[in-house]
Image 1 (cartoon, helix red, strand yellow):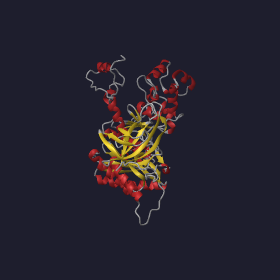
Image 2 (image 1 turned 120 degrees about the horizontal axis):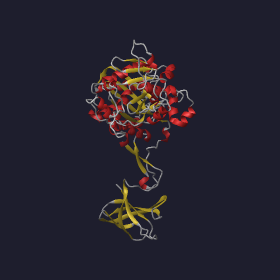
Image 3 (image 1 turned 30 degrees about the vertical axis):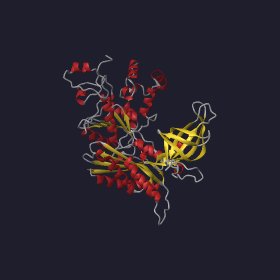
Image 4 (image 1 turned 120 degrees about the vertical axis):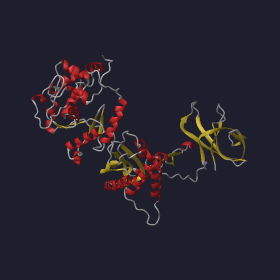
Length: 533
């Protein structure tokens, strides 16, 4: 029987026939031979649950997954925006019902209580008095007190007051504590079947016999131990949103709404002296799909017009990928990364080149991604191939990396960023020291091996062969000795290079170096590292 096919989920009609998840398919067909079944697909179910969680973001930013079929929402401070807890729950279940999902919603002070009541609570139909059986346990079904309301379309809504948490939990089965089947079976062997049988028992004997996880679940359900909700997506430090009675679908309406929200966002940022570095707009379609578009700024940003311009570029870049369908009924604008942005005094007549450069980086980054827009900065090393590195053109590599992680299609968590020390950002000043030897315009990523002949062992080459072409040397300058840092090669030799600036008779000007010394066991090797203009 352990390898038998079992029911993973049942609809309302099957539940009314007495079929429950976990029942063997052979037993179900023995009772009802014509029952319709479909293969379970956990991967598709997981994607559907994630999509519903994305949709629930319209109610609260704190949405956590409770696989395989549940969601956890922290609605503290949010319910009044929807007319109260009951009205909010009604809106959730009715909207989901229109999309073909049957939902049960429970509101309680603890995650454990809400989870237990949503799955094992049995509300009383309005107008019908609670019977004595509603608070007693039965062999195959458990009934909770009158803690909710029964929707006439078959959907259930539960509201548990703060003072009723314990009384609501007492008549429920131990499975409502989110414990595994083996623990439930072990408890049943000693006659413990309901939460009332264990809620007041000493914790130490229970933990010693059934494990600390079982005791923790009891305390979490009644509120003795905190159980925070881990949200799927990060909570932005600054957020504004607009809801519409009639959905909007035109691009100009969406951009106009973004600019209006950007004004509100700029006010929030200005109060704390911050500027946005990563901005995301979330577009909630009426059919439940959510589009998220992220854009990065090259400098702390508070200008609503420039925020709007960022998303003009992003919408142009993604094209028709984000179909509005029947329109968006909620638009949300949030700043996920911020930096300190103190007011600065600009020139009265001269143009602000820094602001213009930041605006150019923003536009290019919105089109191609900030990571693809790079600049060269010097590094504190004298090794030529490591002396200059390409970094993101935006001022903060940390914010750029976070934006790439976020992505328009990605749902991976984004950390809350607050970049408070812009002085640590490396400068883009790359002017060469006038006293340093001239460096080639083009430096090869990997030096190329050549054959060279010198008149004297430590002197410059008189001819060299590069890419099968022999070049006679007309002029040479050097050597410029560049010794590597503390490391050595695989043979334990010091890595030392003697560089020469060489011009051939044909006018080719290159940067050569000899690696090694003539008094070493192995002869030195010659390499071509760069080409001058």
